[in-house]
Image 1 (cartoon, rainbow, N blue to C red):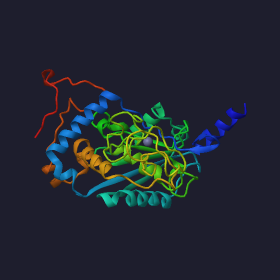
Image 2 (cartoon, rainbow, N blue to C red):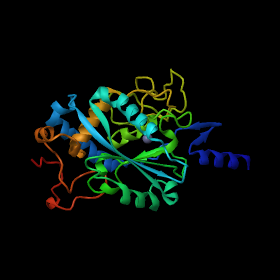
Image 3 (cartoon, rainbow, N blue to C red):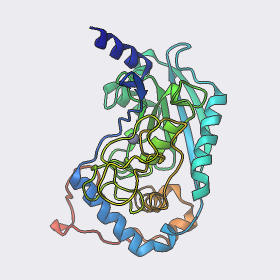
Length: 314
Ligand SMILES: [Zn+2]
C-alpha cells in the first residue's frame, strides 16, 4: 500500500520514481529494428553524397512554436521561462551550427488536453488543432502528461507520413525554473535531440550497433541521477557517456553532445527535414529518398515495381 501511494505521488509530480529518487523517464518510442535499418541505409547514402554538409557547420535555424496547454493556472508557463528554454536550446546546439528562434507562443486553457498521455486521443486532438507547418517548424507542446513522462518526441523519419504528430511534448515543469532535478530545460534539449534523429545512448545496450554513433561508448542501461564518474557497463571500450544529453542523468549532470551525434543530426536534417534548410543549401543537397521508401514508419513501399533501394530523386 505504501509503495502504491508513493508511486501515485511521483506520478502526480510527473516524474518516475526509483529507489526513493525522482528519475528521468522519456516516452520517445523505439522505432524497431527494421525501421532503424531503413533509416541507417538512407543516412549512409545521404552522407556518401553530401559529406560536405555532414562535416560542415552550415547554419540551420529552426523556428519554434510553443503551444502551452494548461488547466487554469496549472501549467501556465511564463513567457520568461519559455524564452529561457530557447536560450538553453541555443547554448546546447548553437556551437554545432543549430539555432532556435522563437516564432510564437500560444496559450490554451484546455483541461481536457492538459493530461495528454503519449499516443493518446487527446495528444492527437491537441496536435491536430495546434500544430503549425511541421515541415518548417519545431512544434513544442507543454502539458502535464498523465504517464509520469518528462516528455517525448517524434523522429525525423516519421515526418512525411505523419506530419500532424510531429514535434516535442514536454512536462511543463521541465522548462527552466521548474521542478528539481529536471528544472534547467535539459529535457527540452534531450527531446529535441530525438526530434533531430538521435537515439538514447543506451539504445540496444551493449549489443551492436548501439545508438549507431561511433563516438558514444556502449552503455547497458540508462544512467540515472548523478552517476559514478567511472560507470562502465559494457565490455566494449570507453566509459559510459553519462554526461551526454541523450542519457538519463539529472539536468545538473548532462551537458554534452558528441561529434558523431552532430554528424548524425546533420544527416537526418538533410534527409528528412530538409525544409528547415535555406533554399541555397537545399539546392546543393542531393536527396536520396523517394516518397514511398521513406523509412521509419514500418510501412512498405508501394511504388517502384518492388525495386526498392534508395535512389537519388534529383
Ligand atoms: Zn529520450
